Amino acid sequence: MGYLGRDELVAALDELLEAERAGARVAEETAAQLQDPGERALMEAIRRDEVKWCGMLIAAIQSLDAKPSARTGAFHAKAMAIASLPERMAFLNRGQGWVVKKLQALVPRVREPGIQDELLAMLSSHRENIERVATRLAAPEGG
Image (cartoon, rainbow, N blue to C red):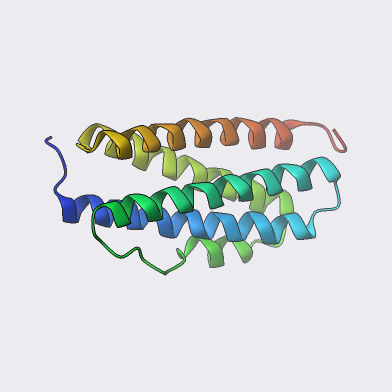
């Protein structure tokens, strides 16, 4: 596989942007419902991270002389339909895993070094978040 052309790259970045926007909203709305301070802090940290990556993706798309999508991915509605907060957190984690897979496939095909470096940082961050949430969900109640 070769490098992505501009339009393909913009489409891939827009898809990630919509997913990150959805993830940020899910984390924010879930944090507001959590009683456990540790879980709430974790969701707030993930929200901040998702917002950070939204900003990076917007800047990357604009650097390619394109207009970023204003849409929020369907993941938001699917996640918020899950009433159980632990189940929703697990679903959010699966969404983070989807982003990791997308990034693993995308990064080698990005020609622009600055964008590639940012996507690698985003990949690392999502892997860390997956571990943090998995650890939290595996902890005994109140742990």
